[in-house]
Length: 388
Image (tube, rainbow, N blue to C red; front, side):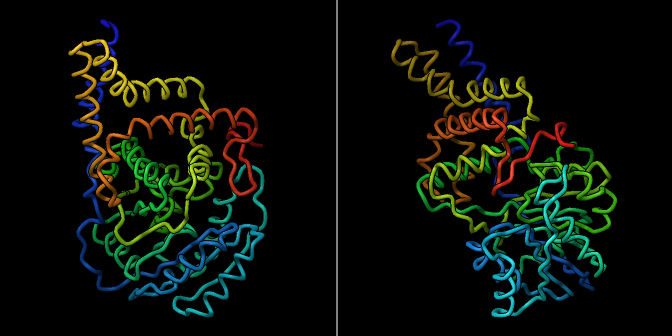
């Protein structure tokens, strides 16, 4: 029990540090910064990479076509080798709904060393550059925007002098598994990349949410986007790092008017979403994987185990330390649950959700070494240093 007490104390210390010293990651009040509308609205081109997205496109593309933007804006949807008629459906939706002009292109299969999405983004950006836009909006095919979304993004970028403005789209939470897993996904992301540090001058923290990234064209050229990150599986974080390394000013926050319409009704769907890139996040390093597993156990699993062990062994100290750590953990999760309009009774279940993420991460490594890592819609991407 002496060892258990010290391990539990370390877990509580870790939670106190996370609560106070990790950029207040648990706060969810960070929205688009205050902004004044520009006198002249810059030209914007919207780039949408899409592969087999016929299921979600009727919900997302009309929201882009209907953007109320005072300047000139145009949409470029890049059909990345779809087999479900994504390109034809996009043209039909444009004819039916009208709105912003739409161009549908297709780049062909990506060459060695490129992920499919970034190859599609490259093609879309090359089409857009012919229009000479000041900004590029990179958005996924499953993201729906409120009519004023583009206007608010551009106003915030202009007013704040940002080279990149990104919003974490509100993901769908309808099924039981979505309610249990999805808010935790954003919570863990914010814990890794505290949003308040991203915009801070001199901070090395950089991240973006790939579903909604407004990028200054000049900054993209300066950072060599997307060629400089062509192998990246976690392309949004890599993009933000490249822009920040090249001297760009970036911002990331939670969205109010941007939503993902992609459903993840079953645990298996969510499992694939996380496991396909989890090991890439750990740089395919077994030692980093081991450290991550041990860290998750210490931070998320030790508190409830210590509480129950302490109660069973009539050890008040262990039970008290475990209970306090669990209470701090649940308290930091409450703001994210409120943001997603979920019951607060999910907060004490965070250790169980963390266990699921731990297993997903291990499975990601197993699939990688079986040659099936980073698989997405019929493509599997090798570790970057193994790519020709």
